[in-house]
Length: 84
Image: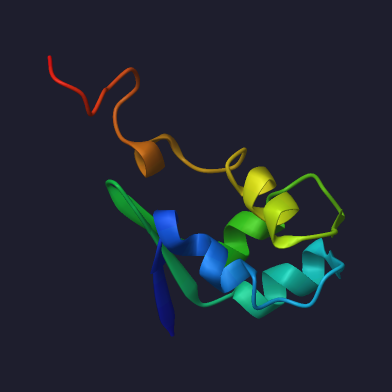
């Protein structure tokens, strides 16, 4: 079982053969734990939730991944890393 931080997920996605179907990507990524700001999820499970059937590149898959991430993946809404 592999774990990857959200900020480094592209390294895992780049290892997939493209183009790739959503089901193949989900199967290959199942068991990979995606770690975010406050929690984690199975990367294959997140891919299975996507509405896109085929990905042409790692960039396409990563962009779509951001549409299915839970709120805790990126911290509190409107939270800034800048000074307050």
